[in-house]
Structure formats: C-alpha cells, structure tokens
Length: 294
Image 1 (tube, rainbow, N blue to C red):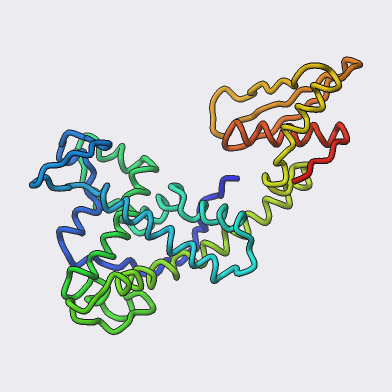
Image 2: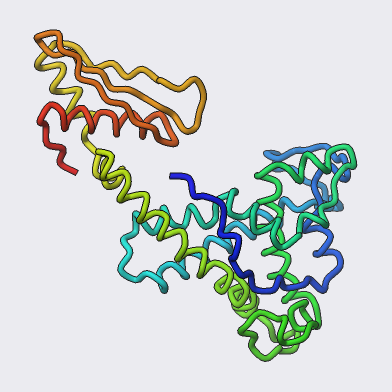
C-alpha cells in the first residue's frame, strides 16, 4: 500500500538548529553546486579531497534514522510482529515521508545547488528526502563538534522536549549524540507511527473485504501450488501476463485453463511483479479449492 500524505494538522517538534556553519551548509548542498566529477563507486580518494555535498551525511543519517525508528516501534507496539513492524518502518522512513517532513520544516528553503537545477531538485522526492537524512546526521555531529550545539542555543520552550544537561565537549560521546537526535526524532515520529499503523490496519480490512489476502506473507507457496496443480491436471504451466505497461505498481494476471477449457483467472496489483504474481496465484488457488499452507 501507499500511504496518503501526512495529516495537515500534524504538529512537528521544533527543528534543532545546527550551530556549526560548515555542517549546516554541507547538509543542504547538492553535488551540482560544485560541479565536481562524480565517482560514486570509486574506492580511490585523494588525501586532500573534500566532501562538499550532503551525500556522506545522508549515508550516516539514513542508518541513524532507521535505528531510532526501529527502537521507537518496539517501544510503542511491543506486540507488533516483526513482519508488520518492518512494513510500518518502511512507511516511516520512505522517501515520500521524509520529503514531506523536509518541506514542512522548510529545510528546502536553504538548499544550495546549481541555479539552473535548483527548482528541479526541490521538486524531486529523492534528493529532498536525502537532505532530510543528511540534516539528521549534521545534528548528530553538531553535538560532537560545537561547544554549544544548536538546540542548546535557543529558548528552552523552542528546544526538543527532553535535553540532558550539556556536558563539556571533551566528555561527550557518540551515545550522548544519539540521545540528542533521539530527543528530536522520537516526538516527531511517534504520532506519524500511530497514524501510519491506523492507515495500515484500515487498508488490511479493505483488502480482506475485497478478496485480498490478509498479508502477502499468507500467499507464500501459492505460486508453486498452482503451477504444480496446472502441470499435473493440464500438462502446462499457468500464464502470468503483465497487465500494466509500466510500474510500480505492477498488475499481473494468473490464467489457468482446466481440462474442460474453462479459464480460471485472477489479477493482483503490487509494488513488484513477483509479489503481484504470487497474490494472483493465491486468488486462483482459492477458486480451484486449493489450500495454501503459509
């Protein structure tokens, strides 16, 4: 499923400022700003080569956000099974969600890029989401490099709700820095997590009423079951034509012709062709009276 846009009345905790001007600039600088040759897969680097865009920070921020959200979901929903929890996490850290947060925090107002590309970059989901991840990492490193990190420089009413007493710079650890970003990200993602889970629950009820499986996990084995049945009963495999010209999402049909020439068919729409194929086979299995052992 694809979540709708975040609720318009979602209250965001204040965005922690970044006191280090270099980090603040780096977090919002697109590679086009410097027009440097790109070598994204190269293992070579020059000793004096400087990273002048957000991509390294994005790489770090992505992992940090994933850790915060995973822990948050475990605390909020201790009875939620790993499969649904993973799906919920994927919604929270998706490019779509992060893009919306970046825009609502107006971080996009500060993006630095080549003038001719700036408007295009601001309108694209992936770079805007990446900048939000880079900002998370910049907040983390700001705690470790600035005498007074950004959130401690503003009025307490505007700061994240839980801030530990500030230790001297030389006594701060990465664990302290993680607590620092956690104090911002947990209040931010808690209402989003509850809203997203409500959306997932409502969607699950709809798909069950529409003859869809309760979860894609429940269709595991359907494809093999239907293929085996078709080979045994008709001597040939089912057909799985793709109904959509482009994707994702992809629409795939499963078609089985029995001994009497009767066509048994069903289609499904999923984010990948493989997943759509599995669900379509599950629907055909139900029509044929075959029981899928999940």
